Each structure stands twice: as C-alpha cells, then as structure tokens.
View 1 (cartoon, rainbow, N blue to C red):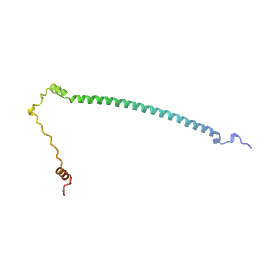
View 2 (view 1 turned 90 degrees about the vertical axis):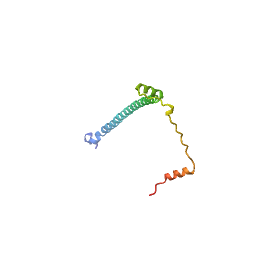
View 3 (view 1 turned 180 degrees about the horizontal axis):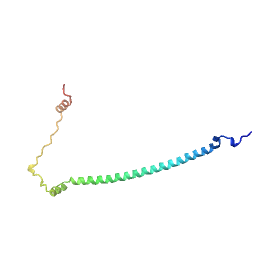
View 4 (view 1 turned 180 degrees about the vertical axis):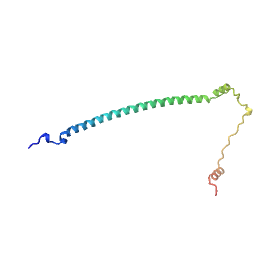
Length: 124
C-alpha cells in the first residue's frame, strides 16, 4: 500500500528546501567574500599609491636639502655668512700656515716584525 505524503517524515519533506537554502547561503557568502576581497585589494592599492607619492616627495626634498648643504659648505657662502654675522674672521697670513711633510711608510722586514710583535697577545 502506498503511503500518503502526510505521513512522510519532516526530513524528507524539507530536505530539498534546506539544501537549496544552504546552496544559496554558500553562493551569497562567496559573492560577499569576493566583493570584500576586491575592495581590500583596491584600498591597499590606494595606500601603496599614496606611499609612493610620499616617497617621491621625500626624495625630491632630500635632493633639495643635499644641494642646499653643498651650497652651505662652499667657501663663498661661508665668507658671506661670516661677514653677515660680523665674526671678524679673516684668512690666515702665509706666515701663520705650517705645512707638515707627509711621512713615507717604511717597508721591509723590520716593519713586519713590529706589526707581528704588536699583534701577539701580552704574556701573562
């Protein structure tokens, strides 16, 4: 004898509806996750772009400051600054300049012995 639908269990009657609900939930969740992920990629790209622009600005500023520093080290600038501040500094007279000869390094076994003696640890 055939059974009526009325006597079927609830799992059999609502099974396809529950499967369809979960399938829609998975598809919807995947769609929301995809959109969120694309949004994150876009925002990170914007942040990278902003930081690259900031880096370029800092590079330009760094170059400008390097040029300014080089200009401030020039003798003309220093002399103008000395006169501006009225420091009273003047170039030294030739009699005030002392030139020292540069020592010529010695080569040979005596120098090597001295180096060897210096590198040994002191006796205890």
